[in-house]
Length: 313
Image 1 (cartoon, helix red, strand yellow):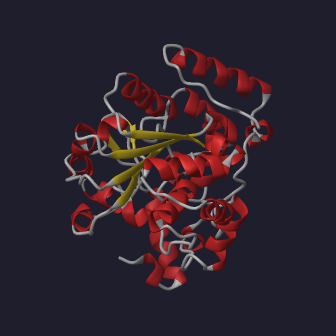
Image 2: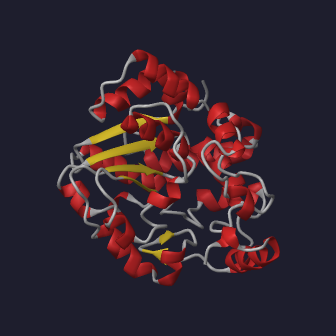
């Protein structure tokens, strides 16, 4: 059923039902309440793994709130070789939220995206070395951004389990990997680190959110080179300007990117996709005790990896 076409009262009734539902789980991962996952979790996740990737496909892989919408818009502009905003929403090309048969019918090249763990992404895409863009962000800002997102997103919150609860409840959940969306941040990033280090994935471009904030032009140049697009310096600058946090958020809420659907499903009727887009906001949220607990967890979980994060600019 198309939620946006319903009258507000009827839509709210359906959203309340969705918020109260339990989250689907698969292979140790808690997942959002997207329709294909609620309908048959195992079938859809196996279909993602068996998805018929094509050589021209580009797959954007991120943990939630790592800069997915930002990079999605940048890459879309690079691919179209123009600084025009794309219409619609990235969820229309999201593997876990989409009808995969419809995606199969899309013409090439396809620009797809997903938050699923590395072990769950299409096997054919990995085995054949098709292009992957992986975006990472420091975990403390991810935690803050995801907490604020979950409180408003009906496919992520769960009133029955009182999730996410208070900030303290939530951060303790994250440290113990309870309510572990997509397996949890640490497991998600560790899988990618191992896959890169052991050369299981080869045709991959890594982007750090903080590097993109600090040097957008340079990072867009790197992305364009990976995508085999020769763009003029002026176009790269134009893409950087159009995709600044403020300009991209304004374009979304003003309708320049089409109808903004998020406020219609958000609990507080705002767009929960765009909040601050900064680096270092975690310092306004973590208490000293919470920060020590989180650092101890990270140290223990990531000690055997080469993962390093930037926590302030």
